[in-house]
Image (cartoon, rainbow, N blue to C red; front, top):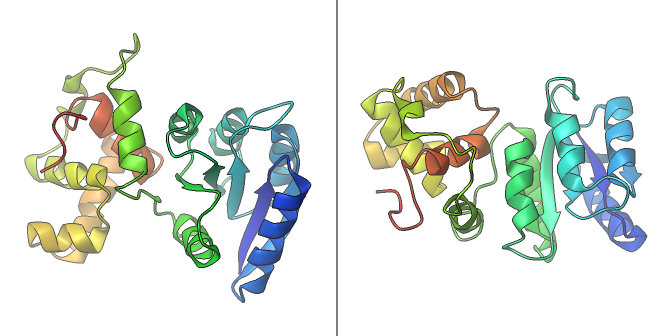
Length: 223
C-alpha cells in the first residue's frame, strides 16, 4: 500500500485529492496539511511514501517543505510530487533542486495523477518532456552565479553521458534501452552509477545536472 500525504492550502483541493487517493485500491491517504510547516511535521510523523505538495502555501512554502522532507535530516523513503497551477512556475524548478521527484499541473486528469503517484513512489522521476524539460531548460539558461561548470561530468563514461542525455530528454529506462540498443538491466546499471557519481537523489536531479553542466541546453536539445 502506497501511503500519501496531501499538502495544499485550500481545504477543498486537499479534500478532493484525498478522496481521489482513497478510491485507488493500492493507495491510502495518511493526512492533510494546509501549510508547508504542517506538511513537514506530518511527514515526520506518518512517514508517507509520497507527498503531494502545493508550491505556494502560507508559513512555509512547498519549496522549503520539500527541502526539509527530502534533505539529509528529512524523512527517509519519502518522495515529493509537486502540484502547481502554471506549467512555467519558477518555484517548481527550485523545488526540483530541493529534492522533488517531479511535478504535475493541478488540472491533470485524475487517472494521470494516480499513475504519477505510483511512479514517484517507485523512485522514478516524473519528467514529462512536454512540461518538465521545458521548465528546466527555461530556468537553467538563466545566468546563476553558483552554476556548476561542465567539468563536473568528467567522471562519467561516454555511455553514461549518452544515458544522461536521454534521461534529460525525459525517456524511461525502457525507452533508453531501445534507443541505445542496450538491455534494460544495463540501462539500470548506468543510471545507478550516474546517481552515485553525480551525487543525485533521483532522476529529476540528474536532469538538472545535465542542464546545469551544459551537457543539454535549451538551444541544443538532447540527441
